[in-house]
Structures are given as structure tokens and as C-alpha cells.
Amino acid sequence: MKTNTIIFTLLFSVLSLTVFSQKGVIINSGASMEMNGDVYLILGDDHHFINHSTDNNLNGAVIFSGNALQEFGGTEANHVSVLEINNASGVVLSSNATVNNELALSSGILDIADFDLTISENSVISGTFSDTEMINADGAGFLIREIAGNGVYVFPLGDMTGTTNY
Image (tube, rainbow, N blue to C red):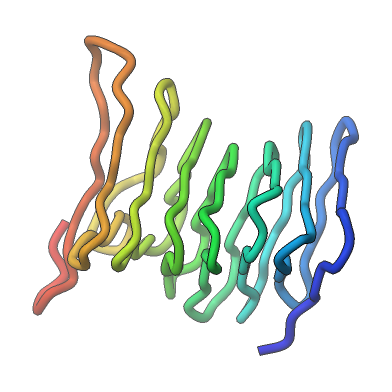
């Protein structure tokens, strides 16, 4: 796997910016990454987002848009404003993650494996849910949905044990 190693403080704080990662993102321990505003980090084929730092502020969108299985994780939890899965081969968590505004399941399965995925209060989960666009929850991880009060809440859960079921 080819990766870009971030060894400094990376700050995106502009009105609108789209960054296409050519090799993936690794945030090493002691480094930090900050995304504010309309910032889109798009990870293509075989590009992963690996976080080993506790000092991150990802208030933009992280978009997985590859054709091979991608990884969203590291040794530290990830907190993002928008997480979009647009990869028919899917994305697997390798650490706990929190989505603060929107989880968009455009194409592919988000496999939470043995990690927890928290959807914050007032966040939405969007997509056309099916056996190929869902959250796979057949590991030890949990989908945690913070509830703001009375309302309709979407839980697009399925499992891939044996036959894939949504």
C-alpha cells in the first residue's frame, strides 16, 4: 500500500476545497489534521485513512471512492463531520468512529467489524439501502445512534454471515 505520511500539522480552513488523495492518508502519533468548512478529502483506489493521533478536527467530508476494499481506522478513534462510502467493494473500520452530521451510503458496505460506529444526535444516514448498501454488523462492534427525541431514525443494518442480509 502506497501512503502519504502526515508528519506535520495539516490545516484546511477555507471556503471550499477538494483534496484527492493519490496515496491515502496516515496521521502519525503527535501529528494533527484539521479540516474546517467545505473541505472534501476523496480517497481513491487502494487508499486508506489511518489515524494514530488524538489531535484531529475533521469538520469536512471524508469520501471513500475506490474500487478495492478500503480501510478507515488506525490506533485512535476517528471523528468526522461527513463520511461517504462510494465504493462497491466497501470500507472496513479498524478503529472506533463517530459521524457528526451525515453518513452517506452511496455505494458499498460499511463493515464496522469489531469497532463501534457512533452516529451523533441530529445526524442523518442517507442512501438507498440494500444488501449492497448497508452497515455490516456481524462482528463485535456496535452501531450507536444518539437520539435527539421523538422521531424516525434509520438503522440500515445487515450481516454478511453466510448469505448477505439487509
